[in-house]
View 1 (cartoon, rainbow, N blue to C red):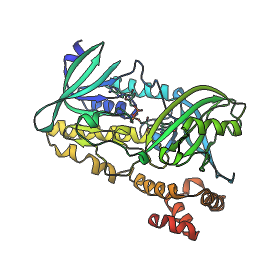
View 2: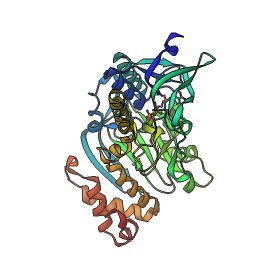
View 3: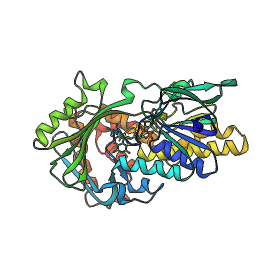
View 4: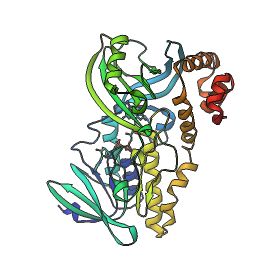
Length: 394
Ligand SMILES: Cc1cc2nc3c(=O)[nH]c(=O)nc-3n(C[C@H](O)[C@H](O)[C@H](O)COP(=O)(O)OP(=O)(O)OC[C@H]3O[C@@H](n4cnc5c(N)ncnc54)[C@H](O)[C@@H]3O)c2cc1C
């Protein structure tokens, strides 16, 4: 196939949000790009609860009803004893139809000039001199093709192999990966425009359970847990147990399972001319597991650094990517990693006390003025037991 015989400035592996933003950014800057997707259709299969804040979405695009399932007008948190912390926040975000959103992002990349190839799986990198790579091995129509390129972006998601092929240690420890199970369900009662979260050892050890509305009584209902804290019980078993108690009449429309990385900084993102973005680079919010906007941001940043390199030949542009990332707009996720460490030490009683504190602290506050880091510090200071657990957050 002629498209596979060309030489590209960059091959991007994976057409999720990270890969499509990377390919679109590079193509928009005049570079030749091939975007590979191993599945027949972009966005399918999907494992995501699809929530995104308006603030982070607007960094990349204007919300479009074509790929929005439901607005989010606030959040409710339930502690193990049922204490409810409600924060109404009109217009704070959306639950997307990601199957359509991801496809739209890929179409935009194609519209900017990227060559998109679906049903095309990267199966290895082609080594060159001095640790550089000169291309990607692509399995397409039962044949492996060598696609040559000057740079590579690994945006191949949580199960990424690109980093390992490039010699990076991207393995995650058991306490750095949340195992998730989720159902798309119908017949979910309750507010149709608030995201809801449940915490507690019985419900979701080491993580949380979510109900994110998708309109017309449908919702993504799922949870993420830490295998190290969950014993022998699987995520699906925790989810079924919760549903029996809280939504016995709801019906399952789709099932999915997957993992979200929950890592601190200093994990590898670059090897010579190979840059990783999104879940492949383990870049998610370690506290919430959210990664859609972070994937888009890191894909875009990796692409800009590569564009700088391609235009000037200065390799420093590639090596600067991690430091730029960790000093930039998303640096708060370093703090969220610390909060997560404290969260993992909490007993159910601590969570109940925190929920009671939060419901007082947040009552009648303008939600747009709430700074989560200040709130975390206030919570830790207000309770001697919590101060012991969360000193490092101050
Ligand atoms: C259960 C669950 C719920 C979540 N809920 C949310 C949420 O509500 N909000 C949020 O912000 N984040 C959420 N996330 C996280 C979010 O889904 C990810 O962070 C995000 O999808 C990462 O985007 P990405 O582009 O890095 O990777 P992905 O979206 O995983 O895309 C990677 C792409 O690469 C392709 N690929 C993989 N290997 C190859 C290969 N060898 N060759 C070619 N193509 C390949 C895959 O098919 C895929 O299309 C959730 C995750 C899970 C598991």
